[in-house]
Amino acid sequence: MQLPKSWMVIFLDLVFPPRCLLCGAYPGWESREHLCRDCRQGIDFIRPPLCACCGKMMAAGEPGRSHRCQDCLIHPPPFSVARSCIRYDQPASLLLHRLKYHGDTSVLPGLRHIIEQASLAGVRDPDIIVPVPLYPKRLKARGLNQAVLLSRLFYPGREPDIRCNLLHRIRDTPAQTALSGAARRRNLRSAFVVADMEFVKGKTVCVVDDVFTTGTTVSECSRALRLAGAKEVYVLTLAMVVATA
Ligand SMILES: [Zn+2]
Ligand SMILES: [Zn+2]
Image 1 (tube, rainbow, N blue to C red):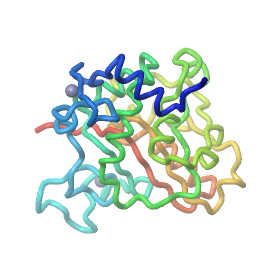
Image 2: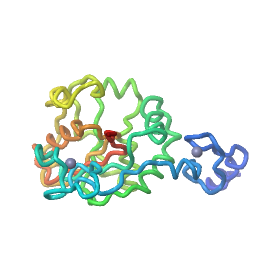
Image 3: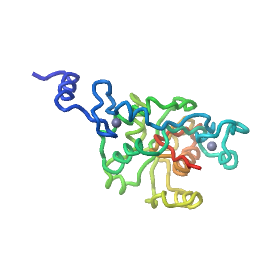
Image 4: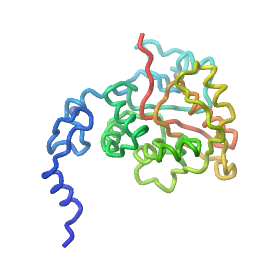
């Protein structure tokens, strides 16, 4: 006899109680997301006041004209709104690291919890969702694209609208992490192309990625989508790198 799945899960949880994904403690029955209470309370969410455009945290009283940060006032980005859930700091960033570099999908319930608890005001429902693509060789080596998995967590039940083959990465660009802002832009220039411009025309699109550092990657994706005729582009990322003073 086959047990219903929920009973099977309960049985397995009794025999092998799940540990907290971050600290290894046993969170007990109260945690379906496999994070203990202390670790959940320690998650560093992005909190307002935010730049109305790129979503960077601003000092209280700092918002100026249009409530945009200096960067967005001087160089308006090609997306209209970008929002991120947490600061890219440990320990929560370890979940992302395990998914991205070790293909560890057991962290997905923890990431789902973070997304459900985050305040993502300003990003309205898009027509289509576009995960930032990896270069094919890199995708093959890694085995998964974390942006696709995050798209499913951001938009549960909208699988048909998550378009993984609409935007192509046509150059295998070096990792961005060691580059300055200008070098990042040069590195990614013309790295993305839209496969079906007719399909994109007039649509609102949400670009999904794992980390927003300077915004160069999502900006280049947004630029390609706007050039293809997208009406508006939003950006959602799980984490944002926040400079500490
Ligand atoms: Zn914990
Ligand atoms: Zn900004």
